[in-house]
Image (cartoon, rainbow, N blue to C red; front, side):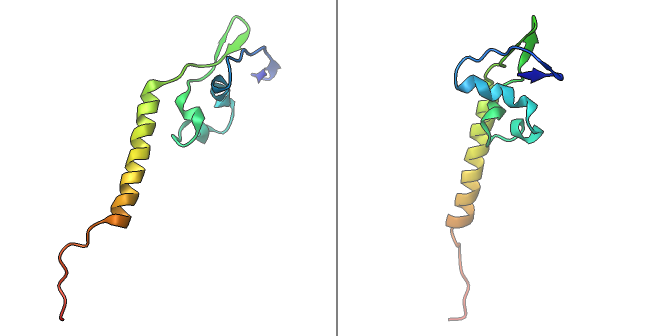
Length: 89
């Protein structure tokens, strides 16, 4: 993997750890709870090797809250009660 303009070895611990390496991608990847890279920390450069960052449980709960809020908002807009109607007939 290229880091800082030069090639460095990078360890990979399976499918899910690869999302940590998205920190080199556009910044909206790790600020949006709708992308899996949001839930991982930045990779760590130590001893000449790049290691994937860890999973963030706090971001998982933030993401769950964001999804719950979006579904609640959609449900509120679509299925809201009409309340009392005042008509002339």
